[in-house]
Image 1 (tube, rainbow, N blue to C red):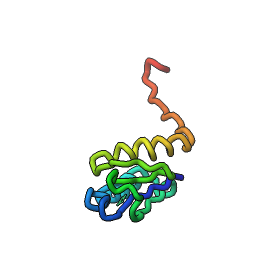
Image 2 (cartoon, rainbow, N blue to C red):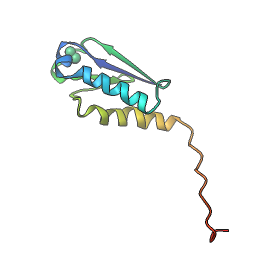
Image 3 (cartoon, rainbow, N blue to C red):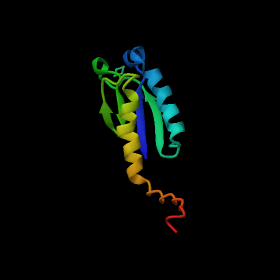
Image 4 (cartoon, helix red, strand yellow):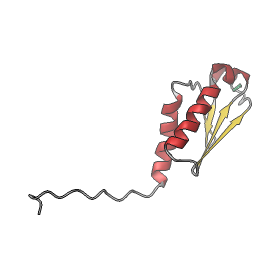
Length: 100
Ligand code: FES
């Protein structure tokens, strides 16, 4: 389980934290992570000069932008959830006449 908390305080809001939240909602839906990821908003993380501040399981990343938010999602969420998921079975390969 990954908990994401995006700061929506005044400073982070002005820097685009609303766009970050929308992007994360889309990414969660796109990767079907609704049961594995909790997305929350909170007010000031006390780091306004270093916003946008986003916390992933308690570890805060600063200076996020709407442009860099997807990369943070990949490293902090997709890589983490991929490690906790069981490996998918390999797809059966199609046999050719030469293989038989
Ligand atoms: S408004 Fe986001 S850290 Fe203060």
